[in-house]
Image 1 (spheres, rainbow, N blue to C red):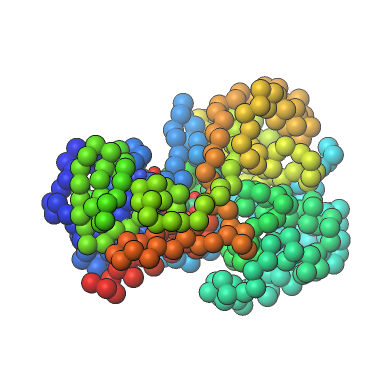
Image 2 (cartoon, helix red, strand yellow):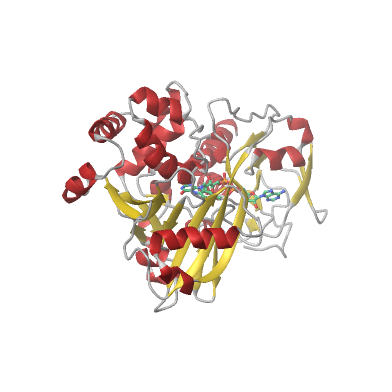
Amino acid sequence: MSSSNFPTSPASPEVVIIGAGLSGLACALELINHGVSVQILEKDDAPGGRVRTDSIDGFLLDRGFQVYLDAYPSAGQLLDVEALDLRKFEPGAIIFEKGERHRLMDVFRRPTSIISSAFSPIGNILDKALVAKLRFSLQFSSLEKIQQREDLTTETYLRKFGFSDDMIDRFFRSFYGGIFLENQLQTSSRMFEFTFKMFTAGSATLPARGMEEIPRQLAAQLPDHVLHCDTPVSKIEGKEVITESGEKLTPDYLVLAVPSDAAQKMLPSLNLPELKWRSVTNCYFAAANSPLNEAIIALSGSPGSLINNVSVPSDLSPEYAPEGQALISVSILGIHDEPDFLTNVLSELRSWFGEDVTTWRHLRTDRIERALPEQTPSSKRPVCDLAGIYLCGDQQTTTSIEGAIISGQDTAKQILKLR
Ligand SMILES: Cc1cc2nc3c(=O)[nH]c(=O)nc-3n(C[C@H](O)[C@H](O)[C@H](O)COP(=O)(O)OP(=O)(O)OC[C@H]3O[C@@H](n4cnc5c(N)ncnc54)[C@H](O)[C@@H]3O)c2cc1C
């Protein structure tokens, strides 16, 4: 990766990709594998976009809690999954509610949990049978078929499916709230079906050395002098790309592998619909001991609570924390910067884990305003009708690692068809 040698040979490559998130990287690899000359211009100091990890005082801090689902088909084919050394979360969750913890497991993969899950007070027996029904019905639906289904809000979909208010409020709002980054469950039912299918077909995982290993691995496959970091693009005129420092490139094809609001800023004639974002605040703490002691996601079952989920990445991979310490990740939906925010988070954590919490050390709080593009049934997919210019990124498919990779590969295929 370089910025010093810009522009490189050929000075104006066939394709310029703006953005080295997962979609831009996947697009570049597909094109390069077909012999196309490509340059990627990235504004940040490293590739990865929304999938980055900081190494601080021996802790690996992912920028926001996220997981790689090992059933993702396209990502699984593109990545060297073995080399990522994926560490799996248990299939299920612990739900904290009014000082008690309840275990709700995927009984198909953890048959021994059938008793505790069946008798957990979250949802009734019918709800548990409906989870099995949903699991089987989605097992036989392809991802393409899911994208063609009637598009409802997830809440309407779950009610239509027959789930009780109790199951929706105490489980789905919190589990899918953490995935959609909103707990009103207004996200598209297609997105719900996609993630439900992926969660039941495989495991939620973390790469042993942090989430950024995913883009790092893709970027490592690029030939030298293709990726230019610290190179923000300020505008596009026709097909001429102008960087903030005034360099110019005029490729045959231009891929905007950036969120559509960033694309609109560079090229105002695009006239794209406004992009709305889901946001999240993530707090990291260090502790002498893990409060969970297992690779599982903990959720709040109380609708009014501040915290959405807690996990301990160092329970999955010791590389997330220095020896003898645990790294605790706490996610809160939305952006929080109120003065008593941290005090309130800690007080809620004390009601989950007891007085041990008073010994935890706050490491960092990340406020991620632009985490996921909103994907409701009424969200409009951005379309570019300018010849030779392509929009690419998770907002084109599903707001996920898999969606970003699919979008990158699809864009490359469209270009390959034309040349
Ligand atoms: C907190 C959080 C939790 C998530 N949880 C999950 C999860 O559990 N599972 C899952 O599958 N997905 C999850 N996601 C979603 C997933 O990370 C994204 O869908 C995916 O990374 C998007 O990739 P992208 O390439 O489409 O966009 P981005 O990653 O946004 O890439 C766009 C790139 O363009 C660059 N760029 C922007 N403007 C310019 C410019 N002017 N010039 C040059 N470069 C520019 C940016 O710096 C960036 O690198 C989560 C995301 C977040 C933030």
